Image 1 (cartoon, rainbow, N blue to C red):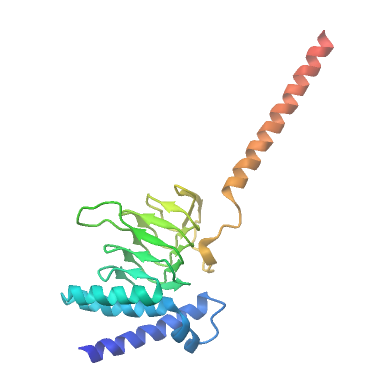
Image 2: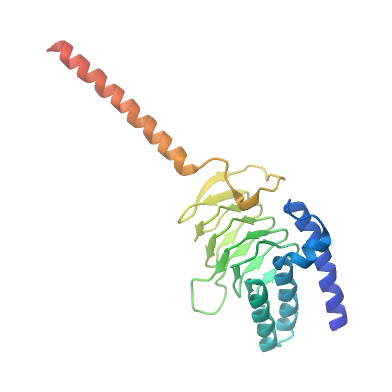
Length: 226
């Protein structure tokens, strides 16, 4: 059983290193990723802990999870369900709760929390679809659903569902973009090229300028009449 598990872990690690090389320009080789990336180490520890959790070795699974958190700074509950090729970049401070579910080819940056908002049993953590990107410091809370190809901006606090191919930013997070077709390019940190707050301020500034011009016209007409 453990021989098969060990073989499976190394196969997954090899697949993981390929996905990291595609998404991180700082990664120069497979051996560098294997030896130096705490995100990979955290996932390997999780795979072992999750395997034992499913076999009802709950305490052993939690001990392995705690050891993984100690050496990587990543806290993944062994009961969480994680798909293939999860990339945890920089890794430090990532928290993935017990009932969290993560699809394939997802990217999480440092400081991301997939947390719960309830003390009751049952589903209480987020579900992420495939190819989701979650920026640094983002907090996804509660049993919400994040659609395929969605992007969550850095430091966002997400409390509601995010549809497929949408981008959510802010506190609380709001949808600022909805791509009709999922983009194939990878965009680090789910960063937006335009700041929605600056855009709103520019629109407000333009409205104020228009109102000032109209007031000046009215004042001029009033003076001409008098």
